[in-house]
Length: 397
Image 1 (cartoon, rainbow, N blue to C red):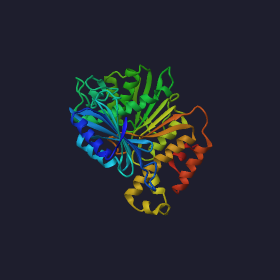
Image 2 (image 1 turned 120 degrees about the horizontal axis):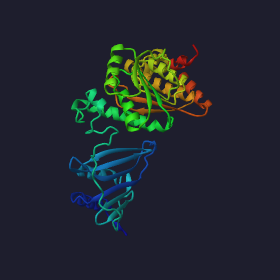
Image 3 (image 1 turned 90 degrees about the vertical axis):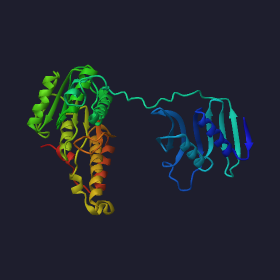
Image 4 (image 1 turned 60 degrees about the horizontal axis):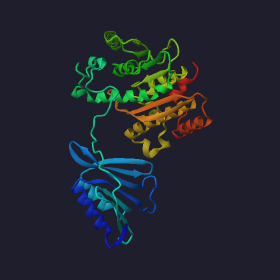
Protein backbone atom coordinates (compact mmCIF):
# COMPACT_ATOMS: atom_id res chain seq x y z
CA UNK A 1 0.00 0.00 0.00
CA UNK A 2 1.38 3.46 -0.97
CA UNK A 3 0.58 6.74 0.77
CA UNK A 4 1.43 10.32 -0.16
CA UNK A 5 4.43 11.60 1.77
CA UNK A 6 5.86 15.09 2.16
CA UNK A 7 9.41 13.80 2.31
CA UNK A 8 9.56 10.16 1.14
CA UNK A 9 13.32 10.31 0.62
CA UNK A 10 14.11 11.03 4.28
CA UNK A 11 11.66 8.38 5.44
CA UNK A 12 13.16 5.84 3.04
CA UNK A 13 16.70 6.66 4.23
CA UNK A 14 15.64 6.26 7.88
CA UNK A 15 14.23 2.83 7.10
CA UNK A 16 17.44 1.94 5.23
CA UNK A 17 19.66 3.02 8.16
CA UNK A 18 17.59 0.95 10.57
CA UNK A 19 17.71 -2.17 8.37
CA UNK A 20 21.46 -1.85 7.84
CA UNK A 21 22.13 -1.34 11.54
CA UNK A 22 20.21 -4.54 12.36
CA UNK A 23 21.69 -6.56 9.44
CA UNK A 24 18.20 -7.23 8.07
CA UNK A 25 18.59 -5.45 4.72
CA UNK A 26 18.07 -8.16 2.11
CA UNK A 27 18.52 -5.85 -0.88
CA UNK A 28 18.15 -2.36 -2.35
CA UNK A 29 17.27 -1.34 -5.92
CA UNK A 30 17.30 2.13 -7.46
CA UNK A 31 15.56 2.41 -10.83
CA UNK A 32 13.59 4.71 -13.16
CA UNK A 33 16.60 6.89 -14.03
CA UNK A 34 16.43 10.50 -15.13
CA UNK A 35 18.13 10.84 -18.51
CA UNK A 36 20.38 13.85 -18.86
CA UNK A 37 20.32 15.85 -22.10
CA UNK A 38 23.05 14.70 -24.47
CA UNK A 39 23.96 11.65 -22.36
CA UNK A 40 25.16 8.60 -24.29
CA UNK A 41 22.64 5.77 -23.57
CA UNK A 42 25.43 3.16 -23.71
CA UNK A 43 27.30 4.96 -20.91
CA UNK A 44 24.34 6.01 -18.74
CA UNK A 45 23.71 4.22 -15.46
CA UNK A 46 20.24 2.68 -15.68
CA UNK A 47 20.02 0.72 -12.43
CA UNK A 48 21.77 0.26 -9.09
CA UNK A 49 21.22 -2.80 -6.92
CA UNK A 50 22.80 -3.81 -3.63
CA UNK A 51 22.89 -7.22 -1.97
CA UNK A 52 24.46 -8.38 1.30
CA UNK A 53 27.62 -10.47 1.21
CA UNK A 54 30.27 -11.51 3.70
CA UNK A 55 33.93 -10.68 3.18
CA UNK A 56 36.59 -11.77 5.66
CA UNK A 57 33.90 -12.28 8.28
CA UNK A 58 32.38 -8.80 7.87
CA UNK A 59 29.06 -7.74 6.34
CA UNK A 60 29.39 -5.84 3.10
CA UNK A 61 27.01 -4.96 0.27
CA UNK A 62 27.82 -5.72 -3.34
CA UNK A 63 26.79 -2.90 -5.66
CA UNK A 64 25.87 -3.87 -9.21
CA UNK A 65 25.80 -0.82 -11.49
CA UNK A 66 24.19 -1.37 -14.89
CA UNK A 67 25.52 0.83 -17.72
CA UNK A 68 24.12 0.00 -21.14
CA UNK A 69 24.72 -3.73 -21.63
CA UNK A 70 27.49 -3.92 -19.02
CA UNK A 71 27.46 -4.40 -15.27
CA UNK A 72 30.13 -3.14 -12.86
CA UNK A 73 30.58 -4.34 -9.28
CA UNK A 74 32.10 -3.06 -6.06
CA UNK A 75 31.76 -4.02 -2.41
CA UNK A 76 30.69 -1.33 0.05
CA UNK A 77 30.37 -0.96 3.82
CA UNK A 78 26.95 0.05 5.20
CA UNK A 79 27.87 3.74 5.56
CA UNK A 80 28.98 3.84 1.92
CA UNK A 81 25.67 2.31 0.88
CA UNK A 82 23.76 5.03 2.71
CA UNK A 83 25.93 7.72 1.12
CA UNK A 84 25.42 6.33 -2.40
CA UNK A 85 21.65 5.95 -2.01
CA UNK A 86 21.40 9.47 -0.54
CA UNK A 87 23.33 10.84 -3.54
CA UNK A 88 21.43 8.96 -6.24
CA UNK A 89 17.80 8.63 -5.09
CA UNK A 90 15.77 11.67 -6.03
CA UNK A 91 18.44 13.06 -8.36
CA UNK A 92 19.46 10.28 -10.76
CA UNK A 93 16.78 7.72 -9.83
CA UNK A 94 13.12 8.27 -8.94
CA UNK A 95 12.28 4.78 -7.67
CA UNK A 96 13.85 3.17 -4.61
CA UNK A 97 13.01 -0.30 -3.28
CA UNK A 98 14.20 -1.64 0.08
CA UNK A 99 13.75 -5.30 1.01
CA UNK A 100 13.90 -6.18 4.73
CA UNK A 101 12.86 -8.93 7.12
CA UNK A 102 9.66 -7.10 8.07
CA UNK A 103 8.47 -5.55 4.80
CA UNK A 104 9.31 -4.28 1.33
CA UNK A 105 9.39 -0.49 1.08
CA UNK A 106 9.05 1.51 -2.16
CA UNK A 107 9.78 5.21 -2.52
CA UNK A 108 8.52 7.01 -5.63
CA UNK A 109 9.91 10.51 -5.76
CA UNK A 110 8.79 13.27 -8.11
CA UNK A 111 10.91 16.10 -9.49
CA UNK A 112 9.72 18.43 -6.69
CA UNK A 113 10.99 16.02 -4.00
CA UNK A 114 7.54 14.91 -2.89
CA UNK A 115 6.08 11.53 -3.66
CA UNK A 116 4.84 8.30 -2.13
CA UNK A 117 6.24 5.74 0.26
CA UNK A 118 4.73 2.29 0.06
CA UNK A 119 4.91 -0.75 2.32
CA UNK A 120 3.96 -4.32 1.49
CA UNK A 121 4.57 -7.81 2.80
CA UNK A 122 8.19 -9.01 2.60
CA UNK A 123 9.00 -10.79 -0.66
CA UNK A 124 12.55 -11.88 0.17
CA UNK A 125 13.93 -14.21 2.81
CA UNK A 126 17.36 -13.89 4.41
CA UNK A 127 19.93 -14.46 1.65
CA UNK A 128 23.02 -16.63 1.81
CA UNK A 129 25.77 -14.04 2.29
CA UNK A 130 28.89 -16.17 1.85
CA UNK A 131 31.01 -14.64 -0.87
CA UNK A 132 34.73 -15.14 -0.47
CA UNK A 133 34.79 -18.86 -1.20
CA UNK A 134 37.83 -20.28 -2.90
CA UNK A 135 37.51 -20.47 -6.65
CA UNK A 136 37.03 -24.00 -7.92
CA UNK A 137 39.99 -24.63 -10.19
CA UNK A 138 40.40 -27.48 -12.66
CA UNK A 139 43.61 -28.23 -10.77
CA UNK A 140 42.63 -27.54 -7.14
CA UNK A 141 44.97 -26.42 -4.42
CA UNK A 142 45.57 -29.02 -1.73
CA UNK A 143 45.64 -31.98 -4.12
CA UNK A 144 49.13 -33.04 -5.30
CA UNK A 145 49.69 -32.54 -9.03
CA UNK A 146 52.93 -34.16 -10.28
CA UNK A 147 53.89 -31.67 -12.99
CA UNK A 148 53.21 -28.65 -10.76
CA UNK A 149 55.39 -30.21 -8.07
CA UNK A 150 58.16 -30.92 -10.57
CA UNK A 151 58.26 -27.34 -11.91
CA UNK A 152 58.19 -25.88 -8.39
CA UNK A 153 54.66 -24.46 -8.20
CA UNK A 154 53.36 -26.93 -5.61
CA UNK A 155 54.84 -28.74 -2.65
CA UNK A 156 54.65 -32.57 -2.71
CA UNK A 157 51.65 -32.25 -0.36
CA UNK A 158 49.75 -30.18 -2.94
CA UNK A 159 50.11 -26.72 -1.38
CA UNK A 160 50.80 -23.85 -3.79
CA UNK A 161 53.96 -21.98 -2.87
CA UNK A 162 53.36 -18.34 -1.92
CA UNK A 163 55.65 -17.01 -4.65
CA UNK A 164 53.91 -19.17 -7.28
CA UNK A 165 50.28 -18.18 -6.67
CA UNK A 166 50.16 -16.05 -9.85
CA UNK A 167 51.53 -18.89 -11.96
CA UNK A 168 49.04 -21.31 -10.38
CA UNK A 169 46.14 -19.02 -11.29
CA UNK A 170 47.51 -18.55 -14.79
CA UNK A 171 47.77 -22.29 -15.40
CA UNK A 172 44.17 -22.80 -14.31
CA UNK A 173 42.90 -19.85 -16.33
CA UNK A 174 44.59 -21.24 -19.43
CA UNK A 175 43.04 -24.65 -18.81
CA UNK A 176 39.59 -23.05 -18.54
CA UNK A 177 40.04 -21.58 -22.03
CA UNK A 178 41.16 -24.94 -23.40
CA UNK A 179 38.37 -26.84 -21.63
CA UNK A 180 35.78 -24.56 -23.23
CA UNK A 181 36.89 -25.50 -26.75
CA UNK A 182 37.14 -29.27 -26.24
CA UNK A 183 33.62 -29.82 -27.70
CA UNK A 184 34.97 -28.32 -30.94
CA UNK A 185 37.65 -31.00 -31.24
CA UNK A 186 37.14 -34.59 -32.49
CA UNK A 187 35.30 -36.66 -29.89
CA UNK A 188 37.19 -39.88 -30.60
CA UNK A 189 40.73 -40.89 -31.44
CA UNK A 190 43.95 -39.20 -30.32
CA UNK A 191 44.07 -35.40 -30.23
CA UNK A 192 47.09 -33.92 -32.02
CA UNK A 193 48.41 -30.69 -30.49
CA UNK A 194 51.34 -28.50 -31.54
CA UNK A 195 52.71 -25.95 -29.05
CA UNK A 196 54.96 -23.46 -30.85
CA UNK A 197 57.72 -21.81 -28.82
CA UNK A 198 56.85 -23.85 -25.74
CA UNK A 199 59.74 -22.47 -23.64
CA UNK A 200 59.83 -23.97 -20.13
CA UNK A 201 56.53 -25.62 -21.01
CA UNK A 202 54.54 -25.41 -17.78
CA UNK A 203 51.44 -24.63 -19.87
CA UNK A 204 52.29 -27.49 -22.23
CA UNK A 205 52.41 -29.87 -19.27
CA UNK A 206 49.16 -28.34 -18.00
CA UNK A 207 47.49 -28.93 -21.37
CA UNK A 208 48.66 -32.55 -21.41
CA UNK A 209 47.40 -33.03 -17.83
CA UNK A 210 43.97 -31.61 -18.70
CA UNK A 211 43.52 -33.77 -21.77
CA UNK A 212 44.85 -37.04 -20.33
CA UNK A 213 44.24 -36.99 -16.57
CA UNK A 214 41.10 -34.84 -16.34
CA UNK A 215 39.39 -35.59 -19.67
CA UNK A 216 40.76 -39.10 -20.35
CA UNK A 217 41.79 -38.42 -23.94
CA UNK A 218 44.56 -40.08 -25.90
CA UNK A 219 46.92 -37.39 -27.18
CA UNK A 220 49.97 -36.55 -29.21
CA UNK A 221 51.25 -33.25 -27.85
CA UNK A 222 54.42 -31.80 -29.36
CA UNK A 223 56.24 -28.92 -27.72
CA UNK A 224 58.44 -27.07 -30.21
CA UNK A 225 61.24 -24.64 -29.31
CA UNK A 226 64.49 -23.35 -30.81
CA UNK A 227 66.57 -23.82 -27.64
CA UNK A 228 68.01 -27.32 -27.39
CA UNK A 229 68.80 -27.08 -23.66
CA UNK A 230 65.20 -26.04 -22.88
CA UNK A 231 63.81 -28.85 -25.02
CA UNK A 232 66.09 -31.41 -23.36
CA UNK A 233 65.06 -30.29 -19.87
CA UNK A 234 61.36 -30.45 -20.74
CA UNK A 235 61.78 -33.91 -22.24
CA UNK A 236 63.58 -35.04 -19.07
CA UNK A 237 60.60 -33.94 -16.97
CA UNK A 238 58.13 -35.59 -19.36
CA UNK A 239 60.07 -38.87 -19.19
CA UNK A 240 60.34 -38.68 -15.40
CA UNK A 241 56.59 -38.13 -15.03
CA UNK A 242 55.82 -40.76 -17.70
CA UNK A 243 53.70 -38.29 -19.69
CA UNK A 244 52.34 -40.57 -22.38
CA UNK A 245 51.91 -38.87 -25.75
CA UNK A 246 54.01 -35.79 -24.85
CA UNK A 247 57.31 -35.05 -26.50
CA UNK A 248 59.52 -32.03 -27.16
CA UNK A 249 61.48 -31.20 -30.30
CA UNK A 250 63.93 -28.55 -31.45
CA UNK A 251 62.36 -26.77 -34.38
CA UNK A 252 61.43 -23.50 -36.07
CA UNK A 253 57.84 -22.37 -36.37
CA UNK A 254 58.08 -21.46 -40.02
CA UNK A 255 59.74 -24.68 -41.17
CA UNK A 256 57.95 -27.30 -39.10
CA UNK A 257 55.97 -30.05 -40.83
CA UNK A 258 53.79 -32.33 -38.69
CA UNK A 259 53.26 -36.01 -39.35
CA UNK A 260 49.53 -35.88 -39.98
CA UNK A 261 46.66 -33.54 -39.15
CA UNK A 262 46.66 -31.00 -36.29
CA UNK A 263 43.61 -30.50 -34.07
CA UNK A 264 44.88 -27.73 -31.79
CA UNK A 265 47.64 -25.20 -32.43
CA UNK A 266 49.04 -23.21 -29.50
CA UNK A 267 51.53 -20.30 -29.53
CA UNK A 268 51.86 -18.46 -26.24
CA UNK A 269 54.85 -16.16 -26.44
CA UNK A 270 56.11 -16.12 -30.02
CA UNK A 271 57.79 -12.76 -30.58
CA UNK A 272 56.62 -10.24 -33.17
CA UNK A 273 55.83 -11.87 -36.54
CA UNK A 274 56.63 -15.36 -35.18
CA UNK A 275 53.04 -15.31 -33.88
CA UNK A 276 51.89 -14.65 -37.45
CA UNK A 277 54.06 -17.50 -38.71
CA UNK A 278 52.53 -19.85 -36.12
CA UNK A 279 48.98 -18.80 -37.00
CA UNK A 280 49.73 -19.13 -40.72
CA UNK A 281 51.05 -22.65 -40.21
CA UNK A 282 47.93 -23.61 -38.25
CA UNK A 283 45.69 -22.17 -40.96
CA UNK A 284 47.61 -24.12 -43.60
CA UNK A 285 47.10 -27.34 -41.63
CA UNK A 286 43.40 -26.49 -41.19
CA UNK A 287 43.76 -26.85 -37.43
CA UNK A 288 40.35 -27.03 -35.81
CA UNK A 289 41.29 -24.61 -33.01
CA UNK A 290 44.05 -21.98 -32.76
CA UNK A 291 45.11 -20.37 -29.47
CA UNK A 292 47.64 -17.55 -29.53
CA UNK A 293 48.89 -15.13 -26.88
CA UNK A 294 51.12 -12.67 -28.77
CA UNK A 295 54.34 -11.28 -27.36
CA UNK A 296 56.16 -8.14 -28.57
CA UNK A 297 54.73 -6.69 -31.79
CA UNK A 298 56.76 -4.28 -33.93
CA UNK A 299 55.85 -4.79 -37.58
CA UNK A 300 52.69 -2.68 -37.72
CA UNK A 301 54.23 0.07 -35.57
CA UNK A 302 57.00 0.44 -38.13
CA UNK A 303 54.65 0.33 -41.14
CA UNK A 304 51.88 2.73 -40.09
CA UNK A 305 52.40 6.18 -41.68
CA UNK A 306 52.47 8.90 -39.03
CA UNK A 307 50.21 11.16 -41.07
CA UNK A 308 47.42 8.56 -40.86
CA UNK A 309 46.68 9.45 -37.22
CA UNK A 310 49.10 12.27 -36.39
CA UNK A 311 47.70 13.07 -32.96
CA UNK A 312 48.28 9.49 -31.87
CA UNK A 313 51.18 8.08 -33.84
CA UNK A 314 53.70 10.85 -33.18
CA UNK A 315 53.97 9.75 -29.54
CA UNK A 316 56.25 6.70 -29.34
CA UNK A 317 54.61 4.89 -26.44
CA UNK A 318 51.10 5.49 -27.78
CA UNK A 319 52.17 4.37 -31.25
CA UNK A 320 53.57 1.15 -29.78
CA UNK A 321 50.48 0.32 -27.75
CA UNK A 322 48.04 1.26 -30.49
CA UNK A 323 50.02 -0.81 -32.98
CA UNK A 324 49.89 -3.85 -30.70
CA UNK A 325 46.09 -3.64 -30.51
CA UNK A 326 45.85 -2.99 -34.24
CA UNK A 327 48.03 -6.05 -34.92
CA UNK A 328 45.75 -8.33 -32.92
CA UNK A 329 42.69 -6.80 -34.58
CA UNK A 330 44.19 -7.54 -37.99
CA UNK A 331 44.97 -11.11 -36.96
CA UNK A 332 41.43 -11.64 -35.70
CA UNK A 333 39.92 -10.22 -38.90
CA UNK A 334 42.25 -12.22 -41.13
CA UNK A 335 41.35 -15.46 -39.35
CA UNK A 336 37.71 -14.68 -40.12
CA UNK A 337 38.55 -14.31 -43.82
CA UNK A 338 39.94 -17.85 -43.96
CA UNK A 339 37.02 -19.51 -42.22
CA UNK A 340 37.61 -19.16 -38.48
CA UNK A 341 35.24 -17.90 -35.79
CA UNK A 342 37.51 -15.69 -33.70
CA UNK A 343 37.44 -14.19 -30.21
CA UNK A 344 39.88 -11.82 -28.51
CA UNK A 345 39.83 -12.58 -24.78
CA UNK A 346 41.56 -11.06 -21.77
CA UNK A 347 44.19 -13.40 -20.37
CA UNK A 348 46.64 -13.30 -17.45
CA UNK A 349 50.05 -11.78 -18.21
CA UNK A 350 52.63 -14.40 -19.12
CA UNK A 351 55.96 -14.23 -17.33
CA UNK A 352 57.57 -13.73 -20.75
CA UNK A 353 55.41 -10.76 -21.77
CA UNK A 354 53.04 -8.14 -20.31
CA UNK A 355 50.60 -8.78 -23.16
CA UNK A 356 47.31 -10.15 -21.83
CA UNK A 357 45.18 -10.90 -24.89
CA UNK A 358 44.35 -14.38 -26.11
CA UNK A 359 43.25 -15.00 -29.70
CA UNK A 360 40.95 -18.02 -29.84
CA UNK A 361 39.91 -19.15 -33.31
CA UNK A 362 37.62 -22.09 -34.13
CA UNK A 363 37.36 -23.35 -37.68
CA UNK A 364 33.93 -23.10 -39.30
CA UNK A 365 32.59 -25.99 -41.30
CA UNK A 366 31.45 -23.74 -44.13
CA UNK A 367 33.44 -21.24 -46.20
CA UNK A 368 34.31 -17.72 -45.06
CA UNK A 369 31.97 -14.83 -45.77
CA UNK A 370 32.86 -12.00 -48.18
CA UNK A 371 32.06 -9.47 -45.43
CA UNK A 372 35.04 -10.78 -43.47
CA UNK A 373 37.42 -9.95 -46.29
CA UNK A 374 35.85 -6.51 -46.68
CA UNK A 375 36.35 -5.76 -42.96
CA UNK A 376 39.94 -6.93 -43.08
CA UNK A 377 40.82 -4.87 -46.16
CA UNK A 378 39.04 -1.82 -44.72
CA UNK A 379 41.00 -2.09 -41.47
CA UNK A 380 44.28 -2.32 -43.38
CA UNK A 381 43.31 0.76 -45.37
CA UNK A 382 42.39 2.68 -42.22
CA UNK A 383 45.81 1.89 -40.77
CA UNK A 384 47.58 2.90 -43.95
CA UNK A 385 48.98 -0.60 -44.54
CA UNK A 386 49.53 -2.29 -47.88
CA UNK A 387 51.04 -5.44 -46.38
CA UNK A 388 50.67 -7.58 -43.25
CA UNK A 389 52.83 -10.47 -42.03
CA UNK A 390 50.06 -13.02 -41.47
CA UNK A 391 48.72 -12.51 -44.97
CA UNK A 392 52.25 -12.68 -46.36
CA UNK A 393 53.02 -15.95 -44.56
CA UNK A 394 49.83 -17.43 -46.02
CA UNK A 395 50.87 -16.80 -49.61
CA UNK A 396 52.24 -19.83 -51.52
CA UNK A 397 56.02 -20.10 -51.29
